[in-house]
Each structure stands twice: as structure tokens, then as C-alpha cells.
Image (cartoon, rainbow, N blue to C red):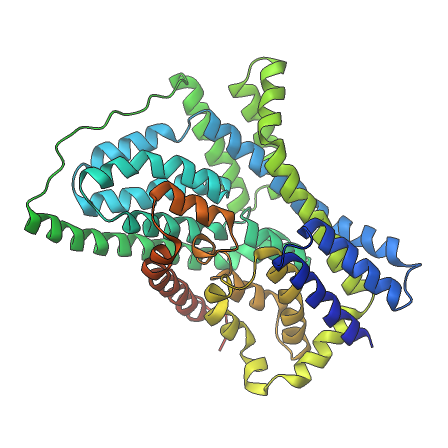
Length: 427
């Protein structure tokens, strides 16, 4: 009874979200609430929801202040000197240019927002690609690979969702993935160099060169302010990576200091907060809704019942190696499931099956994070940022997917290999 109710609840949430009949906020709260009422647990429903919200609160607050912190830095043009320097150094050498694009994207994507990353990076480098008559699909692919891999950051959407769905501290989930993340980024750099070498040969054969110089966009910050901002970024990220401070505390403190450094008046501080309030509210509200969803499914017993039933239905080989199989198909799953429906609907069940068969819930999350809405998000039609990427580069979705998916999937498989090699995922 409980297993069937849980399965119908998850299917209902998936259909409602993917068909766009309900927003994720409504679907994640209303459907499991109705299921709890249907199985006779209406009296306990409020406590289930409160328990779920309580577990999700630190993650939601961390994400809210992470958006504010990096939003302030982007608005202040902190990354602009790095972009200008990279473009100046790269010149007309496609190998340097492609690696520069990857590095710029990684820096800008520190805020975890694909949309803002594409809006900053693409307009800055697209004129170079057009001047050199380089295929725009290559630019879209390079940006997609760098942003995709770096979507694994502990304040990135997929990692936060995975930690929230499994009620695991986000840094506890991310730290084993750090070597895998670094290896994935090095794979992207190597791929950029390889593509650049191919493009350099093509340009040499066509006798093409870059004639014009590109004007660097100046930042309005003073050197002192810029230095303070860079130091603040290093301190905040360093304190998180080395576990000197809880992520939520690091971003709260970083946001407060960033406001004081960059905005002297109260009115400017209010305006800055208002500018970033909408994206912060949208994500935080979904996270709290997800807390209600997982709280209801977990405390009502539906999640445990599905895990026990699922472990008996799946082939023993698949159950034993579930994290590895999840990693293998994680990137293609981005084309079928949006992050909310996968991480809040499907992954908890898969993790429950793994635990019921003697595995660890974290292993399934690690496998999922190697592709599902990380390397997979910049080509997924379920991600609005994908359409922004192809719109800015002015290429078609089909052309972008045909060109970029093989590289993104290869990156996902390479990270899976590294995860197995380092013991993050066991065979």
C-alpha cells in the first residue's frame, strides 16, 4: 500500500512538472500532501512538512546567500579584468583562445547560474570567433563543457538538490567528488586544446588570421576595491573547501562584507539585494517545497516501502552496481528529466534501493552528479539556459546537441572512470 502510494506520488509529480501542468513549487507540495491524506496520515501531515523544511533550511539559506554573493561580484565587474587579460593573452591562437574560453566560463560560473554565465561569456568572445571564422558550435560546446562540469560545485543546483533530497550536508556530499571535479575540468581543458589544435591547422590551411584588436571593457572599481573583492572570494571559497566554516556561514559573512565593500549607501545595498531577490526566491522556494516532498515521503514510510520493494524487483547485478549504472546514464538522463523531478523524485528511490541492498545513498548521488544536469544541463531542452546559449551563439538546438553531446558525454564517462579509480564509486 505505502509503496504503491509512493510510486503514484512520484509519477504524479514527474508528470505534473514535465508536462508543465503544475509548477515545481505546487507539484512538490500538493501531490505528496494529497497522497498522505489518501493513506490516512492527514493528522501527521503538518509535522512531516515541518520536519522536511527544517532539514532543508541550511541548504536553502546557503544557496540564497551564494546567489547574492556572486551576484554582487558579477555586478561589480570583479571577473572583468580576468576576462580582459585572457582575451589579450589568447590573441589569434585558437588553442590559447579555446582554453581561455574554458577558464573564463569556469570563473564566471562560480555563481552557479548558467544563464548569467552565458550572458557574460558569449558576448565577450563571440566577436573573436566570428572574426576568425571559427564555427560557433565550437564556442557553444566549450562554454557548455566548462559550465557543465563546474555545475558540480557545492552551491550548484544539482549538488544542492542531491544533498537536500538525501538529507546529507552538502560539503559531506561534495568533498569526495573534488578530485573527480578537478579531473573533469582538466579533461575539458585538454579537449579545448585538442579542438584548438585542429582549428589552428584549418586556419593555417585557409590562410586566415585575426586582424583587428578587441577593446577591453574597463571595470569601474578602484584597485583597492577590486583587490578586496578578490581576497574575499578566495577566503569564502577556501573556508568552504577546507571546512573552516560551514558553507551557510561563509556565504552569509561573505555577502555582508561584499555589500559593505561595494555599496556604501543603504539605498544601493537595498537595490543590490532587490536585483538578486527574484532568482534567489525562486530557487529557495523550490528547495523548501522539496523539503515538504521528501519529508512527507520519508516520514510517512512511503520512501522506505518503495526502496524495499524496488530492491526485490531489480536484477541483482543492477542493484549491486547501481551507483555505477546511474553514473553511466546520468548525462543522457538530463534530456529526459529536469533537475527537480530527478533529484527530488527519482534519486531518493534509487538511493533507498542502494541502501536496502547494503550500499550507500551517497554513492548514487555521486553517480548522478557526474552527468545529470551537470554535464547534461547545457544541452537539455528542459533547461531554459540551453536556449539562451544557442540564442546568443545563434545556432540551432539540433546542431548544438549533435556537436556538443559527444564531448559532454565523453567528459561524463571520463569522470565516472576517475570516480571508480578513486573509490568514490565502487564496482
